[in-house]
Length: 84
Image 1: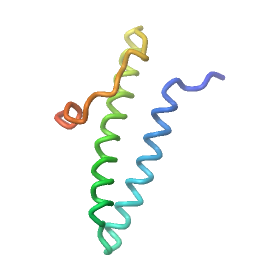
Image 2: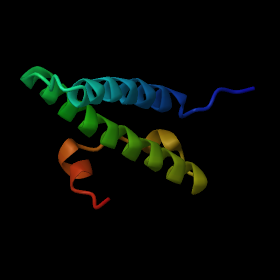
Image 3: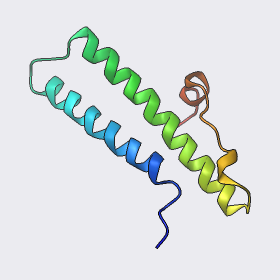
Image 4: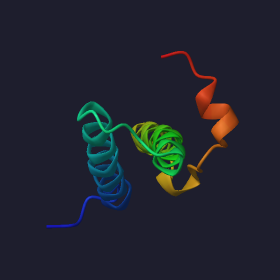
């Protein structure tokens, strides 16, 4: 069985979600986050937005019969402006 062509993006998303969860548990545990941890959490959130966007692009291109490798990571400024 062939590997899912989107597996690298999905694996990275899972890694970042796990780290995001760990940081949120620290914050919710009453100890709060250091400035460095808060900055890391913000970077993770942006990177997750970028990776989810990339994954959606790849899937849309594939569904349209085009090459999913034409998808590219968009800038943080672009993905952060999307309406959720």
